[in-house]
Image 1 (cartoon, rainbow, N blue to C red):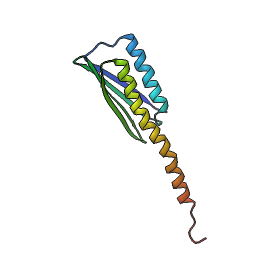
Image 2 (cartoon, one colour):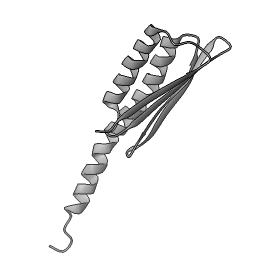
Image 3 (tube, rainbow, N blue to C red):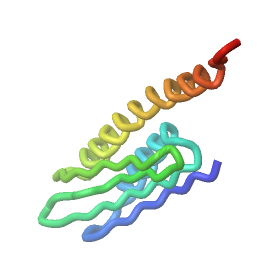
Image 4 (cartoon, rainbow, N blue to C red):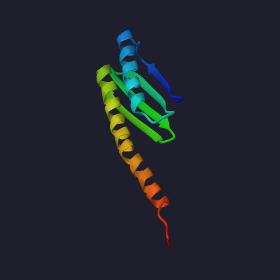
Length: 111
């Protein structure tokens, strides 16, 4: 697996506790993400609010969430929850697509 995780911040100093929260959140996202994913999170503070974008790029597709919140930890939680919903939907459908393809391959016309 060749996953890559990146994050960038703008408009605020990142504290140790913020780094810990970021690492924990991104690690959880990585464990649910498709193989060989690139995960990028961009965080910005403007007018006393944090805004963020979490993006997963992979061969399986692109998953993205964004939000604005007054609390850093609440923002991370919201971004992760939105991505989790997308990943859950992807996980539920990816096996169905494989089963349908296999059924079509095993269909023998005329025999």
